[in-house]
Image 1 (cartoon, rainbow over the protein chains, first blue to last red):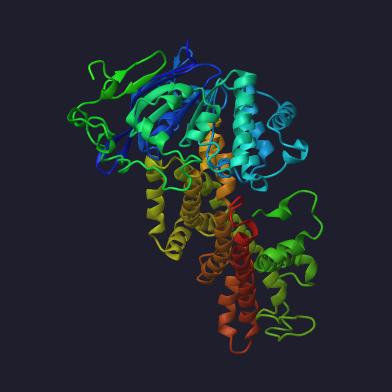
Image 2 (cartoon, rainbow over the protein chains, first blue to last red):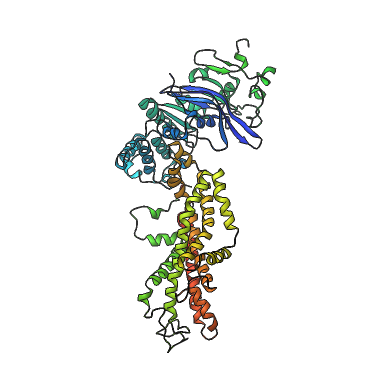
Length: 323
Length: 287
């Protein structure tokens, strides 16, 4: 049985013209010890989908439909206080820019201790000991001294390690990582990804929902990948088969746009057109204006969700049984 | 970058480091410390009690025994100025402290929760703000009656909306920061986020405003006492001294120069401190 089961999640944002769907009918599952990559271009709704699961949405957003089952509980139907107790404990999160995700006015040690005291009910001494242990686990040297330092005294990579220490402090069942390495340079990026894999998956059997626009990151550590376009998941599958044999035209175009060593001299491949905005998403399949295989039906009808092989799912008429 | 002088283990040379970061803060702060000390130690600093009259020396000019001369009753002006500071500083600190106690929670809640709570808190503040401060204070002095505590209360009521606005604006900005979202993602409660994460990051402009308002409080106290709505004689007050000395201004200018100068120094001190505080705290850390 899955750890997290998200079904038909629809999240809307308020604009001047009314409510618009940022995320439409998104469903996915996550097993313990699994890393699922949620990929897509900026504005495709991947972050919104993840934040919706933790109900961390601003006042201008609402969850219009859907369920998110964690164990036997529907997160989306929980009251705020019960959900608050889950956050940081069973569900935790790290963000894109670690430097601004930590409170600049408080020492990092206090911020770690705050979380473990809240959820594990430790006293100051025990919380401090736990913070020290966590700092060692995420590879921070001289942890006694670093506990008393402020966030600005750390580099981006170090700050992300601290954010990770806080995120794993209560042994979460699931981590949502929102572009955790986008703000870091490539060598640090690899270190952080390795840490996520070791600390969450190997040591804790936790599930990780990794939001990224970087297919390289997906290839590095994800087990499965869900590709999002304009608020919908267009294709899901295990990383190897999706990369080897992309089914959806959008996934194909994305993979095609990855720079390789062979074409490094030529112009980079792009996808013609642009991502539709929140208020001007086309009817039918949202990708049809940019799709080389578009048919008249694509403009009018939502593509069917097809399972061409076990574990794989694609929403496109090309793969419909009669297509 | 940080206020690194705040870090532990480096208390020596603290004043010099503050001075290097913010000369106005240390000059203003130093001036106020001297004035406050003079006010508190007034009975021991001057040989005369402020009410002691010397009918042999009315309106005596500055001399060795009376550095600022004497008034029409032969009372020592220096002694009265220093005792007058007690009233001024008490009003300044008391009124702002009262206002802060009420205004900080209100502004914090309005800026953090926003939406309807923001309106519920801010619209009444706008109503109070619509009245000119001095008119409001005069009206309240007439309504509540006179006296030190009542004057503090009147000023506090004028100050509350001003501080609420500053606190709300700063809290509003900080509430949108990613680390607030981060704290929420770690399961911190709203109360905890407000007190522990939003307040410390948003309080600096409130301190600045508080310092400036203390300076204004000294002016308002003097103004109220001057027009007879403040402290009552024979309590020495800078405003009362100005009012009483006015009639003798031609013959004994020290009667108005001394309290006038005293007011200038105190207000200058608070304004310098207010100007210097932001440089001490920030540009916000981590930026």
